[in-house]
Length: 346
Image (cartoon, rainbow, N blue to C red; front, side):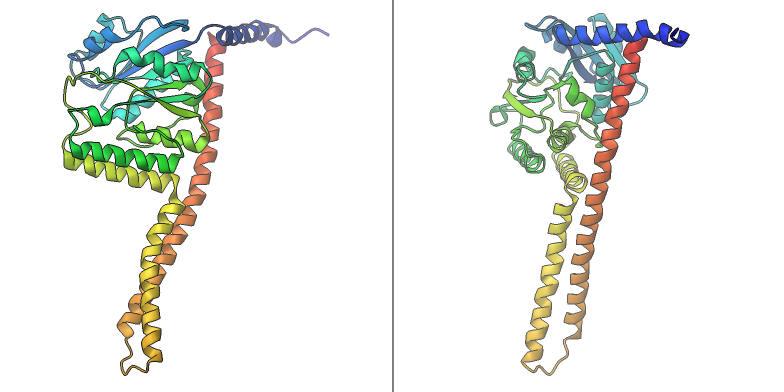
């Protein structure tokens, strides 16, 4: 039987794609270091100067810059310093979206491990091998570089306290033991990068750790060093603004990932108050009071109903969370299919 012409034509492409996948698995890993940038023409050269071009046990090291709508010479500076890939966003979309745009491009470029760092040279690039070690040894698929928060003189006592609070919340929700949840110095395996998706427009740091804990991505941390500050933080405009954004972020984390727990606690407060008022009314009634105490009874009923409604919202939120997990699985399959198709066309 003669095979169809289409099958004959497609066979070499399929064999070539399979060969490339086998070669990638057998060869040394390809590492891409991604850097989100917003008007970083002054700090980017110093950051790139510290980044490695070769790493022990790594086949190839490439650099990727995500230009988040810069209005200065960030892109030109990146090209002048030999950056391999540039993702150029037309408008400023925020750190979280820039992070995801970079991850998508790194995956498309065939990265086996993705390292994320900041353009202000905050993190010591010499610690990149420490970030890669747990992934290369098979102990983790996502590694967070933990800064020595207590020893950073640029951080105020309030900021250090908020850092600890945010990290505690992330640990309680995700089930991980990351001591510095807001650190942007990280490494991701290809499998981990495929599964991550950030909903927050403000920052990716907290949500990626929580997602890793929710979907079972092995996560760990390593101590890293920091360099002297080169500029003010772009995320922290002022302490009140940082507090507001941190509270909103933490609230959204619980709302998205732990809705039943959050609404159970919220509903318990009015329910407990209403229940106590009901007991008080019953006790007064049994004591033979001359007054009806109708306002107290009405308030008790309102509080009890509020508690029940909040618990119902928690159950609805839990159903929504289950649907979100299904959508994430579908997205994962779509990403894999899209990347496989791209490999076949190469």
